[in-house]
Length: 267
Image (cartoon, rainbow, N blue to C red; front, top):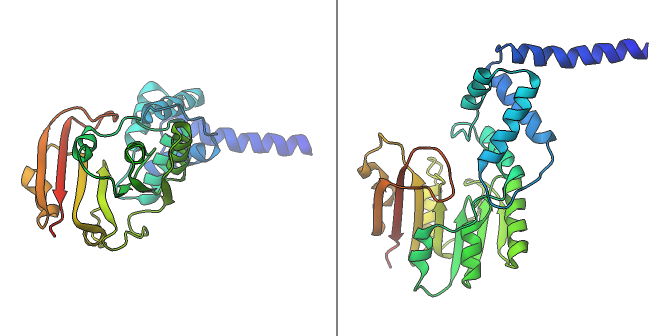
């Protein structure tokens, strides 16, 4: 009886794998498989790095299941940090930060912006592994960073411990984080898009002190005009704006167009 039950269980496990390997997986099935893998794989973060480590590990797993090179490539095109599905986006970034602590060097834009500025309070929005928050903390700033990925929070805390630095970490998304009122001297937006129609833009404006700065860097779609990039910042004083082809400083893929902006809230 036990042997019969075991054979039945193995058949139930092997059959879905065979079906997936034959190229019949829908987008939903691909995401379901990826999610189960992310939940089951132990964290083994490499210092620095990006999502390339995670991608390589997942592709190795797919090849072991019997998927062809072409089918593995199709699966990887389906997966990614979806802007339209927060749960899938969180799963993706959990996977990335299970294998990596994220880029280590702060944005050059941030370094140049605060070079001669007196330390104050700073917020790192969607901080990932905390590279910008840690740089600010090392320069004497009182820093808070938030991210919706639990694995990113763990990576940031490990990076802080490794560097002997302290800053406040909060697990939250753009909607649930308490930005406060006139609380921050600098807000860093590094490859995040909190403009979601749910009032985040207004809350960021209210939370910045008069004279406070926004430091924003992002990879821009080729078809988006420069005028559209400046639309969310109309009531700020623009101190610096660049829209050019350049490297992404720690990130891979996504084209080469980079937007850099420093904006100041008027008194």
